[in-house]
Length: 410
Image (cartoon, rainbow, N blue to C red; front, side, top):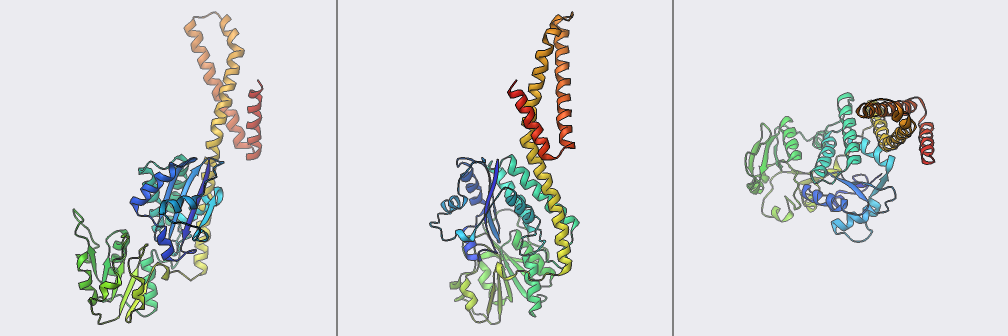
């Protein structure tokens, strides 16, 4: 079994290129099934966030497929134009990347924990679509376990927990205070709720848009007001700050709608969506300042954070070692089972005549033989696993290979 992945992220491509390869939940569900149906692929997980998109597969060792070509086929993108924007990883390099990623060590905001939830959701989506397999299940679960440990055991000094926190921190450094400002948040999903809650906690007067077609009770963060999505342009001239964070494939704030409103004061627009929610051309308008996901990268590299990074690395290494032990055991256990069966069969042949000549009832003889077989299996297991615990890995594997040859030649 082999692990491969291909990914594009904020370090290799701007938001507009990342948007071409992003997936909604529905699209990701369809895509993982399409990839799994390809020859040689056993499982697939797709991780698609604002900062990155990654496709993970487990395949046969000799699989020679191209994930980039698969992706372009799914997204209906032709040519090799964007190949340089992607990074491909295999085996240990891929595993290490996932552990570091899930721990928040590759995020724009170092140590942020949104990625932990996003990785869990990606695995859950693939599982619900019956597109994952045992190897990817264990790999992603162990990466999530590492992320949880880091979240509870490591403090990232001065790190902001999300992009919206980092945005407010940056604006504060530029002299913009959220407190007392009229704010509108377009979108009431996970990112939108976090933005609204954070702005409200910073003292902003926050209104959240809600779409009419949503059925049932729609919850908004405490302290926030709500309006219908269709009324957003009526409220916009009163706003000092507007954040848009939806999963919509279309712009929530296209330029043409701004021709219908009159802005009487400076307006800050923050686009936290991929694909973009806010028309980029609005950044050229007088009185409007536009930020997107790529505007809020951390640049500080303080000693305290370096120490936190080292602590997180130690946890990642420990959890990775546990994963590879599982992976190696997964491959070796069927071989040990075969050796055990061959050894028990060998013993059966050697004691069969003795048991046949032993005076006893047939039922007792059969029961005795089964007891001997069970005991023999336990002895073989104890010997082999005992060797595993007291020998170096390479020496142990040589012993297993030697035992296999003994019974091959028997």
